[in-house]
Image (cartoon, rainbow, N blue to C red; front, side):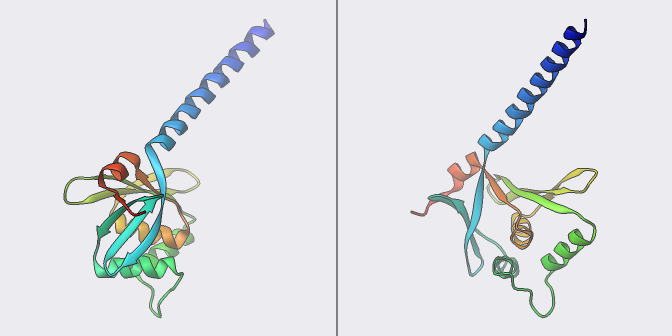
Length: 155
């Protein structure tokens, strides 16, 4: 009788692990980790390998991304520096920023924020997400289909 309990428990754990692996595998197959390659004027270039998304943003956001990339905090902190300080003060981490889609006019992104109790997914402008991510060292991901469709060959 005891053996049946252990077998059921083992099968339950196995099924759970298989399901968890499948979810992680699907997620990793759907997204690719990217780097901010360059910021030129108000143009941001983010990509992986020979593919990159080249997108324009406001001069202020481009400047804030560039400052964050170089770890520079100006005499007066930017909005993104203030957001990072708020996150630290409340023990909230930015787990990742995910660029999800493009609708013909705008790119859409989500920030995944974690506290001890929960994970919060927030809609955010990609440039704001990038500006915060470069300050916190958080990874940035792009939907692979989006990168294939909108990405330019940079090699």
